[in-house]
Length: 308
Image: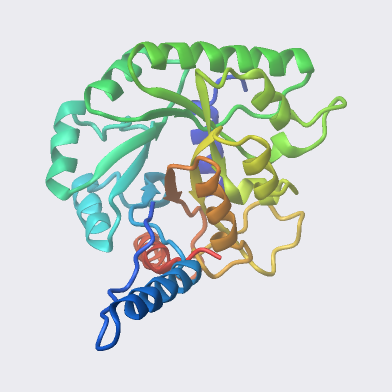
């Protein structure tokens, strides 16, 4: 499974609201002024105590990589039944649209009540065509899923230049471009932190970012620090949990959402306050479970999520 992931990433790489809901209050007998004052005070107290939750969330279809190729529409129907409203596809052997014309895929999604907001794709092949197709069916983002560690600062600069170019292509087509991080970019290299270099050298007008929270934590960094330091730069995130007993040196340690060590209520609250718009679950490992069960468990967790 690890090799499958590496192969996909190498192929796809480039260079190697919820609202606050208040209860209804009813005033009984008594003076109008007193009742109004009491209701106002009570509502304020409740408003301070009630916390928002997600009303829409998505799933990266790579979570279902061992299932979806055999029956894309059947798999998507089940995901809709679990409560997902959004999907993020990936550019595998069957393409972003699973061997269907992009407009046909869109119609099938509409019939299921699903919205394809984004896709991970190979930005080195037919990128302008992909951007045009994505725009035609109302997608919001094309995303570079992986670039790999670079051997020099100069090579990192080539990466950011490429990202800005891709961002310009997407902007021309009326959509957005984003980069999805992995752990390696948070490791010090040549006197810098590569991810900071990426953030500082990509044009905010052209390039957004998808924070994979799992990989930030696995890379030894603090998601909240990055969300606040680069406010409004992270527009999508992967909500992916890390096993509680995994030591820091273990890379492949994803687990069923809500059973791991990552404090999602706290992190996602900060994310929403700092410009995050799309919350997309992903899972890469399955221990004593199945991909579809992981998806259902993840949806159940996100439905009940209340921010800290």
